[in-house]
Picture (cartoon, rainbow, N blue to C red):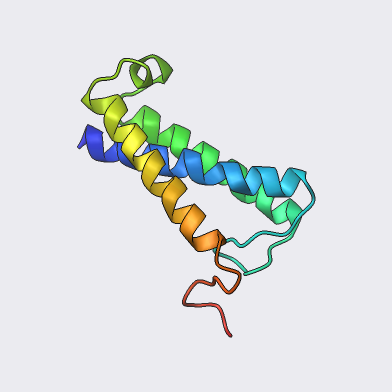
Length: 104
């Protein structure tokens, strides 16, 4: 179970990065709330991802030291991070990207 939690911690922490960068740069970016969320919404969304990722990381019994140990736990975290990075790259490189619940 700890490996699954580490995977999700990697996903949440990685997902916060593009939202934080977009928000700090003053640009809109898609969130689960809207296709073009404001910069402020993206900063808040990024920190929600960071807090959730840190919480899940702690819940799984992990910490920063375990992430750099290159054991099964850290590899699971990195696979989750890679999965989210590739998913974000694929989704956000499409100019018509939208979540299914957004109206056309």
